[in-house]
Length: 281
Figure 1 (cartoon, rainbow, N blue to C red):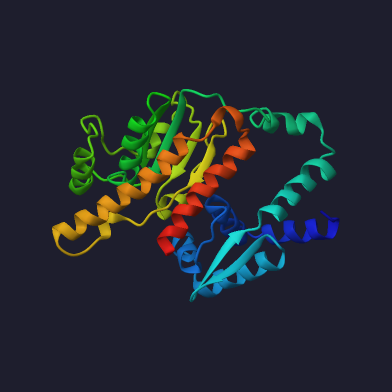
Figure 2: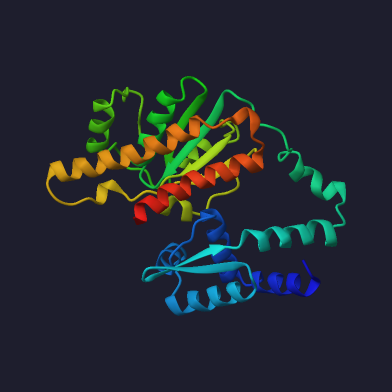
């Protein structure tokens, strides 16, 4: 990256509001986010957000795509990679004391092929993340330890979700709603993967996870918002379960032993994008 472009990008990110928008888009990467969702998550006025997005786009940090009547903003990963590389290798001259703490967890090695610890996060931890926990526990056949949590967990699991799980042969006796704080303690399990399965959770401000796990966003609509008869609501929960089952079945089938972190991150992103595209229809 050229010095002028880097200086422009750094100056753009020097504003707290623009930095907040950029950080949120990185958490959703590689998919795009609508301005209304960004404004709601960051509590920004529409005109203020419009200025921030315009500045980020002008700096090449963000790109925009029209899909139907909606605009979707996403982080430009190539530009972001160039900016980080400029800071690390041009400014920092690749000094080992600067890079070593980051490179230690990013070695270009294949992931081990067993005993992965995986956390699924959503807002209420009463349906989507619970589905994911039960599915990975059972489809993983002992190769994965599955956990779930919520940023604002409900006091009880959704009865429609429990019925879907029971009908599909899952043991629900050990499932419960949990706050994400249970997995952020010093002695907590160090996760290999952390997935958000709802847009609200992806927009939450969470500290970096210990061990730098691979992260993915597999957002699905909240089935608890379904309206209609009980039968119609039950159908929406069943469809959500089926969508997660497809994603998790594809995830457990990945050739972990032959994928390095970069390749595995790309596969995880692709699974989330496929699910998102299916929802858009």
